[in-house]
Image (cartoon, rainbow, N blue to C red; front, top):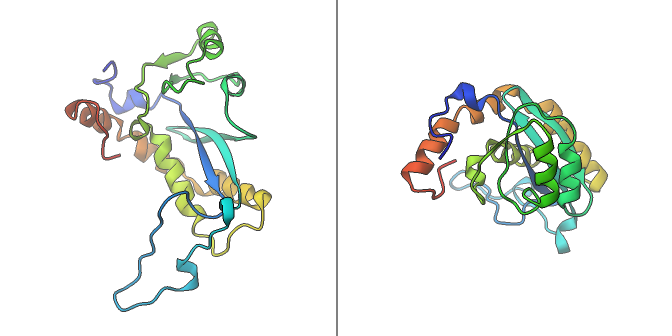
Length: 197
């Protein structure tokens, strides 16, 4: 792996980006409520479900060592054209591309070749090697701290932007990015299988 000897200072230069989906009513998978032994479930422990999940929003954003970046709401699905448009906002750091087909399309490759980005070789299907995934997880946990579900998609987006821009601290980005040398070391040790991150 080309970055096996990188230090934390090297990883500080990288812009970490990816997409995520935020559901209006909870997650697509299992959720857990922790209660004390002998305690009972309260209404705030139970997330009500709605047929088809009540809607969701797709987002793209980035983080750096200095904190979270701007967030782009994606209407519909992210495709190669939209991804290229997002990248056209000047990025001046190293940029990992995770081999998602829209990220490696001829359109995007041609655009990136014309830019001064340093594209890092990156394994496909490796969310455990991308610190933004930890930040997406933290964002979703903080959204679950609201006692009531958002009344609609606009309120969901307002909550997302408030949490992302106001409650997410640079120190949290720094903490996950500083784990990169350990992530890479574990990935190599485990021959490319998933890591604990």
